[in-house]
Image (tube, rainbow, N blue to C red; front, side):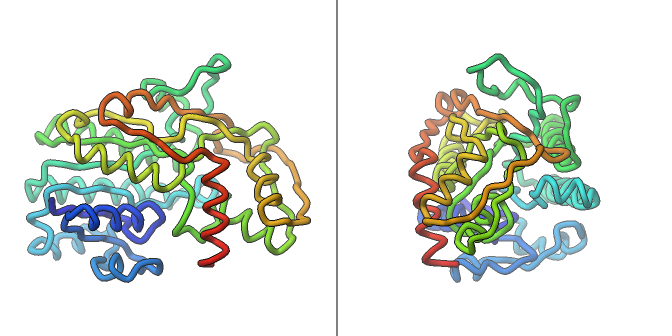
Length: 308
């Protein structure tokens, strides 16, 4: 297939493009940032601001025969979007422009990267994981969440109105290689290595961390089983919870760090508890995560040590 991947220079985008190329697909990347991790992925990147529909229109000859669009591009730091909600509007604008481009050029297959943030802070009985039907706009915690709920709604509307086939993926705390951002895993790595204090926002905050290769495996399996998977929403995660406090402690242990850990209250807009029910993705297209947190964080530290 000829596939357009937006956000191709990001953590998921880089690893996904690598994998799609290895599987024999023709890949075009779209990002306003260079890919600093992989020259082959950088070479297939179109430098574009997806907020500007005219830039997409100008690329029509190059993109008109694309068969599938995987829309990963987004401003993805929850608390940063609380502080700068205009970045959430950017996400909505990107998504609308991609859907309009697909509509005008007859591209019928689209995948959207959504988030576990769409579940908000609803309280489930202990031991019950979040299935896909639990998301609702009334539990929206932040502008970032709103941008992902809006994106899901736009994909649903375009599917119904314009004869498109869609898959919505809700990722959860994807971590691993190709990430030197201020996300919590690479941030704690840098801070622990330097002996700086690790700030934990919420003693009991517990999330479902997904190793990058498992996340990408889920996407590629959904593509390979498109007719089974299409027109539905899926959680992609590991299916187990890890507290942020345990992450901080594990990072100190792996690096032999003497950093202090400072525990404060959870910040405005952030989800405090999430464990994914991944049975739907398993049953529909064979999603099978292989890397538990203890192994994934070890691999991540090894990669950061060698590459950052």
